[in-house]
Figure 1 (cartoon, rainbow, N blue to C red):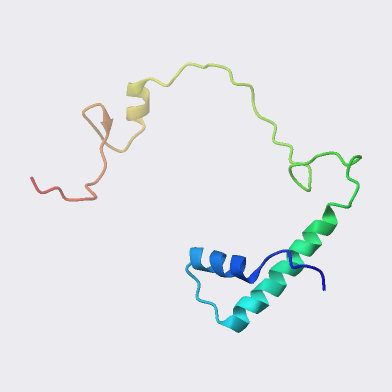
Figure 2 (figure 1 turned 120 degrees about the horizontal axis):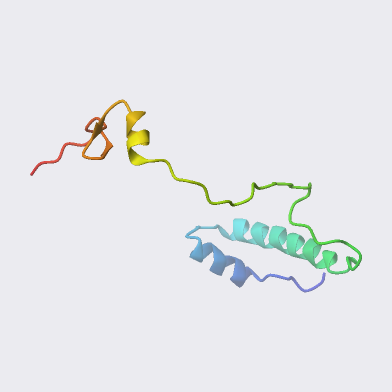
Length: 101
């Protein structure tokens, strides 16, 4: 068998950092599984991807944006006129939290 890509000590160290308690059997099983995953990932290094166009998503993500054009801002009195209630130049809303002074 080839040298493992991850040691049992490394598995136990990562488990400790993650605050996981692994039995000896679980640690050995985790080492085997992680070694298989790392072996698979190592195999990906052999692929020739020089002709592959870099992508950020597996499907095209077209998100057209409107032009950022400055426009006149609504007047405060116009905006507050549309509110059910206003007070002191702002929206009046029901009290949500009681404040003990």
